[in-house]
Length: 357
Figure 1 (cartoon, rainbow, N blue to C red):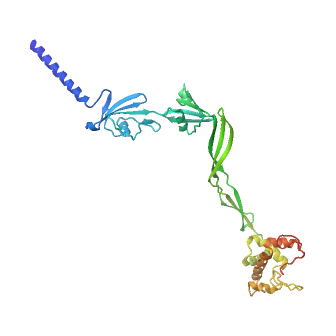
Figure 2 (tube, one colour; figure 1 turned 90 degrees about the horizontal axis):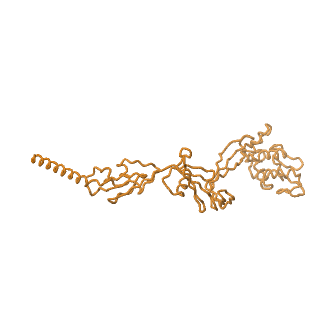
Figure 3 (cartoon, rainbow, N blue to C red; figure 1 turned 180 degrees about the vertical axis):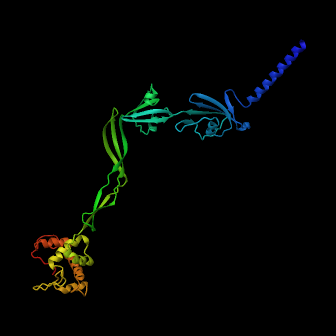
């Protein structure tokens, strides 16, 4: 009996010694509260890291080099709006290292009639308002309401911005484009074509805005800067002269001589008034000759030896004469309509008309 008791005692001692050995072996790798250990075998690279995840605590022993690596090995996922301190790329530098995870939650920001929802991990009211894309100015007050019903409000907390005082406000404004009309004398009269589509420009306008009890009471423009010039819309309108068939040949001579399309109608009226566009027309009393009724006719030799028979040569001489004496075809027409009572240049009084002499 005594021998049996002795054997039982010896067996219990062996079991106790074994358990103590196992405990001592594992204590080299885990401290109280540790959840798991990496497969790494070098104690020189191992660190105890405690993770605080919105109230939950987890301690691990790991050789992971960065905060991101620790969380990945612990199979803890992080959302874009969550806040991790230290940052995910921070290097684990101490044996006892803490990681804090602040989970993002929905928040409602109200600024007058403007309501914006934002996912935020911050608890600072000004930061939350700025995350909603709003500016906080000196004098503004942010009132925090904890919503009783998440489903009703759609957010855990509501942040109401009460605007007071004055501040500057920068607004990007549109600059409307203008429409330009250009006349094309080679395009049929009345026809319209879009040559260039218009595009609005942009400018930054800075206003000084004053609020009282969250209500804007005044706004004054301080400065503005154009950041993009508007592009004008260009409409081309046809203005080609309508030439009667009986004047078609004379019109061709005038074009060949250099009469611009926009001047053609007026030029033909003057030409037909002088000579009916006959290159051999001769005034029996004065001796004036040709289409322009030049006196003497040989003046037109400055434009060519064929001045007596070539209508184009005669009209070329007439162009120089009209531009030199009257300033252009329209001015010459105005002078003719004055019947000699206007000056050749500006329509003031003159004693007598002197046409192409």
